[in-house]
View 1 (cartoon, rainbow, N blue to C red):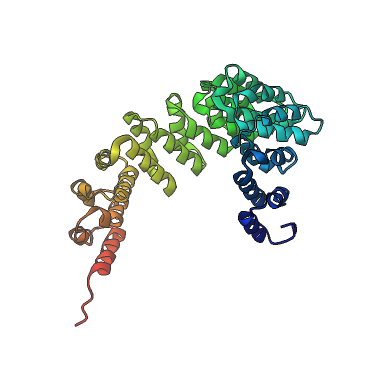
View 2 (view 1 turned 45 degrees about the vertical axis):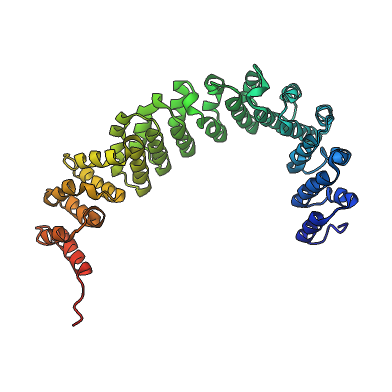
Length: 388
């Protein structure tokens, strides 16, 4: 096990099988994080509180990805010194050690870690400030009153990734974080705007609308998904007009989640969207609002409307729902004045009719060449071949 150049899988198996405290302690310095994690578990299983000294000796000098593993292991065996040691490490001149200390305090998720972490919000290194914000978010609402406002100061930090961490922390720690997050809505960095867009529903209306109109499509998408009922009109405009498919899909999702049947009027035009994934999202949103039976009734009503595009889109939507109960209403589309609607009926027939044959025979005499040919091809394809 001393040979760190051996295959990592072999070292891992050796650690899993070892019952030697010396070998397991040596494995705590293995270059493979997976080997180290297994060594921590095995050492704790073997020695319990007796493993504390070996773990403490390394917790602030290991790979940062392992700090939480060492800390939580010490917490599990009841080590009472880790909080004190981590707090003291925040005074270290080495930023890497301060960063490890912050991660350790976050892994403890202990209310007693709040004050040291609050102090770390003023660290001169941005990475330490960001880690302190994430650590406070891990402590959660138990961090106490006022901590959210302290984190909100860093929404205007000069370092973008600190501002992003501040958005996350404030959203986690404050029940109504909207006003505290407002500065981030107009941030020059799109990653910051993207972070705050995920909380658009809690923002004051001007900030939410700014994010819904953001030049970056990912920001608009996130803002649309998070939008609340207050922004229903803007979200409906995005569904109808936004140039980005993903934004229109997000708008459909948001409208479907609003739990107000009246919103269906804003969704139905989306059935005509040029992108099939958006149309699917719209149909799913309508089902959320109206149930499948309600959507079928609504679409059957749309077959009587003035817009040929809507009648055609409604037929395709009904076929996706596989709604044979709509057959009586759908059958009337065989006499629709628009040949594109009659073509849509042919393409949808197998999902909507128990026996499409009579319909196809009827449309095989259609005055429009395309409709007539489509019906004839359907009949040829479904007529058994005479092999006698």
